[in-house]
Image 1 (spheres, rainbow, N blue to C red):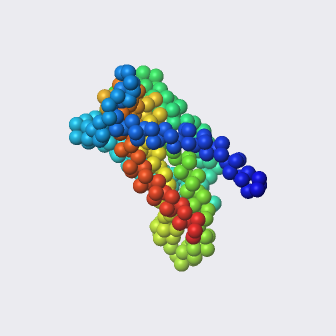
Image 2: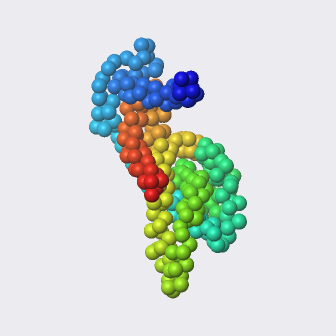
Image 3: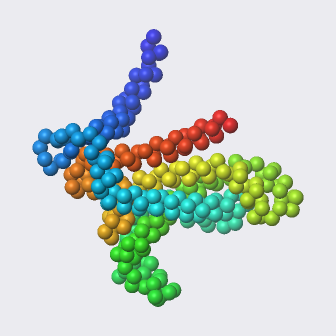
Amino acid sequence: MRDRHLKYVLVLPAILVVFATAVWPLFESLRLSFYFGKLSRPNFPQDFIGLENYTWAFLEEPAFWNSVWVTASYTFYTVVLTTLCALGLALLLAPGGKLRRGVQMLLIIPFAMSPALIGVSFRFMFNPEFGLFDAFFGFVFPPLADISWLSDPTLAFWVCIMADVWGWIPFLTLVLIGGLASIPRDTIEAAQVDGASGWRVLKDVTLPQLAPVLAVVIILKSIFSLKTFDQVYMLTNGGPGTATQTLSHYVYFNGLKYSNIGYSAAVAWLMVIPMIFLTYAYAKFVFRKREA
């Protein structure tokens, strides 16, 4: 009798921790999203207002739609660029690939850095007075020197994308290397014996067999890009203006700077909607792969 219940007793502390740190805050934020909640006022939360926070975001708040556009653009460009760069590096690092040892050493550097540290590093590197990139461009292409990269809305947006791509390439490369290693060598060798060029082998043999792994990589990167915060916060803090203000930063900005917790909780739950679909797609691909 004791042995039968022991497994539940052992797992109970982990369940309580998950409930206290994830489940309860999640449902508490959902409850707050239906209230007018200002931390600066007494009796928090104040008044039940139903869906008013949601309708305000959709119909009355242009800053919300700006953050939606920024997040969607940021997600699209980071996913596409990171996947392409990671795929290229994975092909180089695959068994028999060229420059394998040198690229592996370079991958260690961004892989070991936190997103916040990457944001701080890029902020200093793009400083127009003493930044590394300013000195490099001044030496290689002087017209690009002395540019205030983080003061221009378009340039600041692309600097954020560059920092994210640089930080995520190592992880996605390692995942794709594992995918390439699972491809049977017989199919590639058979195509080469038939006289297929390297491009035809890649297009007709390697990529179709790598498609499930690529799908998982794209979905996983999309999830993390949609909820990005720390890197943007440390690099541009959503500026200049709101040019790089993602949805996560918008939630932080309204919730902690203006103490509008109810509205921020509503916007955060609007972020949950695409996350649910992406998470479902990710789980579907992973479980289908395991069953196969």
